[in-house]
Length: 133
Image 1 (cartoon, rainbow, N blue to C red):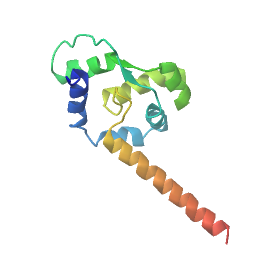
Image 2: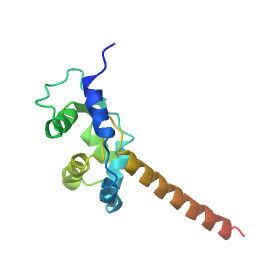
Image 3: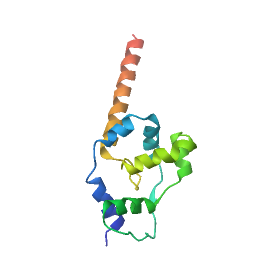
Image 4: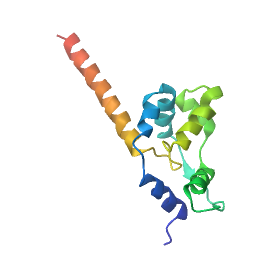
């Protein structure tokens, strides 16, 4: 069976992730909300791919997103981000390769969010234990 050119190109970006994009998410609760909502979205690839006009990153990345299918309305609803600011926030996440057009996120951002949640849960657990004594 032939592998998907779309998936192969996407995996090329995933293989070259930059950890610095964590700073973008860490500094914005709005961006964080979109990232978390993105991981709960139904995202798929177009059945019929458009033609990719080049093999460089500047052409391939937009082509990958052009062939991604998801509901912007559902993402706005799940994230709780105002519709007026959503497009700019989403463009920042896509442009900095925090979100991937297959419904996943940058692995460094994923680890950051997981650590943040675990720390938050530990604080709550510690508070609950001290309050019950």
